[in-house]
Image (cartoon, rainbow, N blue to C red; front, side, top):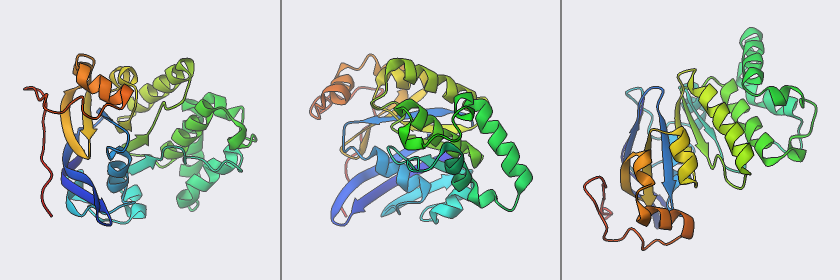
Length: 256
């Protein structure tokens, strides 16, 4: 459903992504993990059309969407829930949903059905439609962000920092919401800091370090990789240096 092939990206002269490749099947959930500054959020922005790769190719359902405008990427079914910026805090929940559904304003039936659908996914939001989104808890704000994304009927849903800073009981609620979303056949790419959360929701995982793929395989295997666990939890970027295994895929930065 989604394929990233040999993608490089740079902010000016600073290269952030190096030869990154990954793929996501229809209805599959892929966890994207890595150390701080590894390029996870940048990769999601490239997929969503908010940034243009300096090299490589991104495909959606076999069609090349590399460098396509973000608005057109959304129309093709790729929707991003940005980390920390998924809501309009000064607006109510209802206004947030209304703003997100602006592209559906000429199709009132689809708009009504979409709103009913997302409130079934997130019934708590139906009780707080007139509450200012910025006054809600972190978990509820994340639900608003997911609800807004689901209004656009994504084929591929990219979620940046799903559980960051949230209490375990709130994360559990979000995991149930993600599972309900997956029953609709949506493919997921989720940036996640917690190995346990990643393993609970995703079959496969990709681990980025210094902008390059250092591991790709079953998410459960990550729990057995002490070097990756140290890199994620302790920020030890040297933990994975020189410790390649048969399951690990490494790449060298290409010279520009």
